Each structure stands twice: as structure tokens, then as C-alpha cells.
Length: 251
Image (tube, rainbow, N blue to C red; front, side):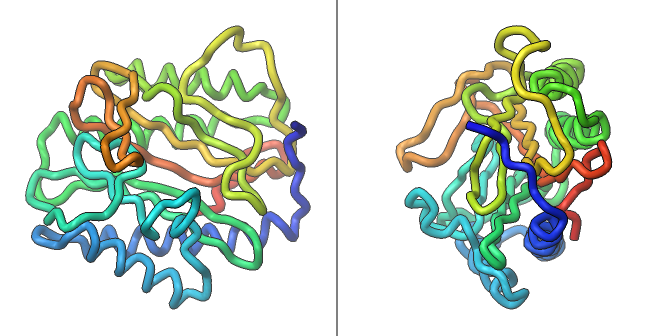
């Protein structure tokens, strides 16, 4: 399947959808505190998105029951909001999607709750730093596998490993589109499609501590690593404009 090249007007609409994602993440980062339940955090996120004139795109997507993925501690991605009350020392992944004028926005952060351990801060820093390192490296003409290689090297150099079987993705009028962008390389780096101006996609480093194999929990959504240790996740949506990546999900 061909990777769609977006027009400037399409990218502008996704920038507006993405800005609402970024604003919602910053809003939740500022208000989440010890004792709040994951369901309360989800409800506040949904309310904020609606007030900005967008719709929460995750709610009902593929059957997902909430507007915000709330991934606590060892849950790396796709955590379902529950009555769990966040506490000091937790790390919380927040993944949010919007839809505005038929186009999607998508981004994620992992945040500390109160005071966290040095090791958990390194875990969060790895996913965030890897994301920005990869974004800054993007140039039209490079292959997506080269980008995956940069993501993988950054995670491994920090002392961690990338989660297998889940990946970044294209985005536009669909929440997930071509191409798939793993955080690791299978096969040769000099193969596969090249990055071109007009492409829009999400990069999302998913970081495990020791083992990379995913386990899906009984809720059929929450993903942990086979090491069952804490993980982290960061994501931005970018467009390739004038040969470089422009972040669409800044607040």
C-alpha cells in the first residue's frame, strides 16, 4: 500500500487536531495528583478534548472503552482506566487521540506521580529523549528502516530495550495507516520505503527494562513486557515539510 502524501491544508488540519492532543496532555500532567483514579483522569481528559471542539478518537476505536489510555507502572501501552488510585512513586503513561474535521491527532507521554526513583526517571527520559533524537534525525530521502535503527540505538544505548510487535504508524483520515514504524530493525536498513515531503506519521518509543517480548493482560488491552518491570512510552505526530520533520502535537 502506498504511503499518502498530504497537502498543506491537510497538514494544517492535523496540526490543529494535534495541538488539542498536546494541550490535553499538558493539562493532565498539571493536574494529576496522588489519590486520583485512572477513571477520573480519563474523564477529565475527555471533557477537556470536547471543550476544545474535537472528539476523543480512542473511545470506541477497535472496541477501546475510554478516551485516554492510562498505562500505570509496568503497563507500557493501551492501559484501560480503572478505579486504581495513583500514588507517590508511580509512573503513568497517558496516550491521547483526537479527531477534528475528519483528521486525527495522536501523542503520548509518561509522567511521574510525586517523587519517583532515579531508575524510573531514567526510563522516562529514555523514551522522551529517543523520540526527540529520532525526530531531529528525519530527512526526506532516508528510509524508514534507518529511522527505526536510530530509535533502536538510542534505546539500547540508554541501557534499555524496545518493546517488540508494536510500532509507530502513519496517520491522517485513519488513526493508523501506512507505514508501520517499529522501534527496532528487522532485516537490512537499506531496504523499504523512503521518507518524503508530505508524509505524516507518529513515532512512539516503547521502552522495556530487560526483556522485549509483549504480554497482553486479561483485559485484552494492557501491554506489559515479559520481564514484568516498569516501562515507558512517548509519542509525537510529525509531518515532513521542506525535508525535515515538524511536530504537529505540540500544545
